[in-house]
Length: 406
Image (cartoon, rainbow, N blue to C red; front, side):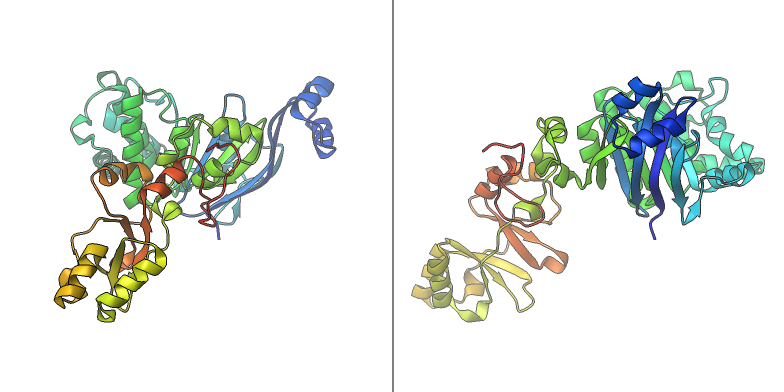
């Protein structure tokens, strides 16, 4: 069961929402409805679900409705129609006392503007939510210090917000949200007020924390590169609607329409695509087959090197055509002639991380999975093809996706 499920969530701002809803059902656009009724469509019949431990990024330009949407998800703004469920429990229509309890136990929110109390110390700011819940003083301090340690600010617990840098204040905001140990973090443009270097540090911090926290995160941003870096899935939003939802590589290589294509056209594919998207089938042989069989296999497939694997396809090494010819002439075995110290990467290695490795190599890069099982091979041409869009992440076939030119 998904951690959060949203169905047909809609928000109409104005005094006659029902009139706007009828026009929405007839297919009227946001602009047409506003012109006809004066009602503004903030969110338009949005449905999605988020799995436990997933970072789901909602991305869009200013005015697209993304901040309204995240506030509908915890009922800081009341929806006009629709459903929001957390662990199968419906929030819409929930009585105020019950809703407050769900927010305290399951939802934490991190804002763009830090929202810290200037008169409280760092630790006291973090304790605030626990204080509202009437958690005993000693336990509040303990949880606040644990949260401070998570974000690397233990030494600043007695400082005041105006003594901290912007990045440190945002860490305090994150620590405050974490202190309650919520299941779901709602992060609304949480890093957008930071300068680029600090912003990247905070992204790193969040990804590092997520390795251990495994929180379910709804992350709002207008920045494509931030969305690509953080999101397990991305929803691109326009005029209150989701235009496309998918994994980062799907958004990049198969944009749903002209709007998405324009949105992503300047993004760096090398930071999105990973090794498994560009790897080719790896020619391999077990060492018992011998040098003559290895040479014939090279000739049949037009390759100048061959991987040596065991019966379970565990990578043992690599031989070149020269190595095989030498083995034939000397009677040496493939195991004796093979090179054991060969470059390899995991299937999820980003393409940009391969550039330094490829620059110094004259042999392909092996892609290996668990227990060094050989999955494929990367050659320079495949990487270049991926960077100009000649790769389909779903099929692994060389195609030209929409919006990219070779």
